[in-house]
Length: 121
Image (cartoon, rainbow, N blue to C red; front, side, top):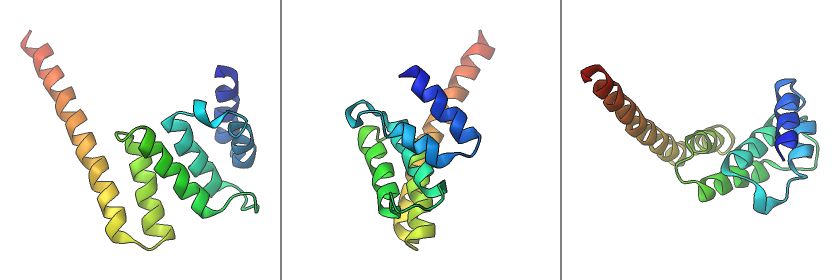
Protein backbone atom coordinates (compact mmCIF):
# COMPACT_ATOMS: atom_id res chain seq x y z
CA UNK A 1 0.00 0.00 0.00
CA UNK A 2 2.84 2.43 0.81
CA UNK A 3 4.24 1.95 -2.68
CA UNK A 4 0.88 2.74 -4.28
CA UNK A 5 0.53 5.89 -2.18
CA UNK A 6 4.05 6.97 -3.14
CA UNK A 7 3.22 6.50 -6.83
CA UNK A 8 -0.05 8.43 -6.43
CA UNK A 9 1.79 11.37 -4.84
CA UNK A 10 4.40 11.35 -7.59
CA UNK A 11 1.72 11.38 -10.30
CA UNK A 12 -0.17 14.21 -8.59
CA UNK A 13 2.97 16.30 -8.20
CA UNK A 14 3.57 15.83 -11.93
CA UNK A 15 0.04 17.07 -12.62
CA UNK A 16 -1.12 13.66 -13.84
CA UNK A 17 -4.36 13.76 -11.88
CA UNK A 18 -6.27 11.24 -14.02
CA UNK A 19 -3.49 8.69 -13.58
CA UNK A 20 -3.25 9.42 -9.86
CA UNK A 21 -7.00 8.95 -9.52
CA UNK A 22 -6.90 5.74 -11.53
CA UNK A 23 -4.29 4.32 -9.18
CA UNK A 24 -6.13 5.59 -6.10
CA UNK A 25 -9.24 3.78 -7.29
CA UNK A 26 -7.37 0.46 -7.10
CA UNK A 27 -7.36 0.74 -3.30
CA UNK A 28 -10.40 -1.02 -1.84
CA UNK A 29 -12.84 1.59 -0.46
CA UNK A 30 -12.82 0.05 3.04
CA UNK A 31 -9.07 0.76 3.30
CA UNK A 32 -9.23 4.36 2.16
CA UNK A 33 -8.43 6.97 4.79
CA UNK A 34 -10.09 10.34 5.17
CA UNK A 35 -7.08 11.96 3.48
CA UNK A 36 -7.35 9.57 0.54
CA UNK A 37 -10.99 10.57 0.04
CA UNK A 38 -9.94 14.23 0.00
CA UNK A 39 -7.30 13.53 -2.64
CA UNK A 40 -9.85 11.56 -4.67
CA UNK A 41 -12.16 14.59 -4.76
CA UNK A 42 -9.33 16.95 -5.64
CA UNK A 43 -8.06 14.74 -8.46
CA UNK A 44 -11.59 14.46 -9.86
CA UNK A 45 -11.78 18.24 -10.05
CA UNK A 46 -8.30 18.72 -11.47
CA UNK A 47 -8.46 15.90 -14.03
CA UNK A 48 -9.11 16.48 -17.70
CA UNK A 49 -12.87 16.23 -17.34
CA UNK A 50 -13.43 12.76 -18.70
CA UNK A 51 -16.93 11.36 -18.32
CA UNK A 52 -15.77 8.83 -15.72
CA UNK A 53 -16.60 11.07 -12.75
CA UNK A 54 -18.94 13.95 -12.11
CA UNK A 55 -18.54 16.93 -9.83
CA UNK A 56 -21.10 15.23 -7.57
CA UNK A 57 -18.59 12.39 -7.15
CA UNK A 58 -15.99 14.90 -5.98
CA UNK A 59 -18.43 16.39 -3.48
CA UNK A 60 -19.29 12.92 -2.16
CA UNK A 61 -15.57 12.20 -1.71
CA UNK A 62 -15.19 15.29 0.49
CA UNK A 63 -18.28 14.35 2.49
CA UNK A 64 -17.00 10.81 2.96
CA UNK A 65 -13.66 12.19 4.18
CA UNK A 66 -15.48 14.26 6.80
CA UNK A 67 -17.64 11.28 7.81
CA UNK A 68 -14.49 9.25 8.43
CA UNK A 69 -12.73 12.07 10.25
CA UNK A 70 -14.88 15.00 11.40
CA UNK A 71 -11.65 16.86 12.29
CA UNK A 72 -10.18 16.74 8.79
CA UNK A 73 -9.59 20.44 8.15
CA UNK A 74 -8.50 19.93 4.55
CA UNK A 75 -11.75 18.09 3.77
CA UNK A 76 -13.80 20.91 5.30
CA UNK A 77 -11.93 23.53 3.30
CA UNK A 78 -12.23 21.57 0.05
CA UNK A 79 -15.95 21.00 0.58
CA UNK A 80 -16.33 24.68 1.46
CA UNK A 81 -14.71 25.77 -1.80
CA UNK A 82 -16.75 23.20 -3.72
CA UNK A 83 -20.00 24.51 -2.25
CA UNK A 84 -18.96 28.11 -2.89
CA UNK A 85 -17.47 27.82 -6.38
CA UNK A 86 -19.37 24.93 -7.95
CA UNK A 87 -22.75 25.09 -6.26
CA UNK A 88 -22.82 28.85 -5.57
CA UNK A 89 -23.84 28.07 -1.99
CA UNK A 90 -22.01 30.60 0.17
CA UNK A 91 -24.11 29.86 3.26
CA UNK A 92 -23.16 26.17 3.51
CA UNK A 93 -19.62 26.94 2.36
CA UNK A 94 -19.19 29.43 5.18
CA UNK A 95 -20.29 26.79 7.70
CA UNK A 96 -17.52 24.42 6.57
CA UNK A 97 -14.91 27.18 6.52
CA UNK A 98 -15.89 28.17 10.06
CA UNK A 99 -15.52 24.59 11.27
CA UNK A 100 -12.04 24.49 9.75
CA UNK A 101 -11.10 27.79 11.40
CA UNK A 102 -12.38 26.59 14.78
CA UNK A 103 -10.37 23.37 14.57
CA UNK A 104 -7.24 25.23 13.52
CA UNK A 105 -7.72 27.73 16.34
CA UNK A 106 -7.83 24.89 18.86
CA UNK A 107 -4.67 23.37 17.38
CA UNK A 108 -2.92 26.75 17.40
CA UNK A 109 -3.87 27.27 21.05
CA UNK A 110 -2.49 23.84 21.95
CA UNK A 111 0.75 24.59 20.11
CA UNK A 112 1.10 27.98 21.80
CA UNK A 113 0.47 26.37 25.18
CA UNK A 114 3.22 23.86 24.46
CA UNK A 115 5.64 26.61 23.45
CA UNK A 116 4.82 28.52 26.63
CA UNK A 117 5.56 25.45 28.77
CA UNK A 118 8.88 24.93 27.01
CA UNK A 119 9.89 28.58 27.49
CA UNK A 120 8.96 28.49 31.18
CA UNK A 121 11.06 25.37 31.78
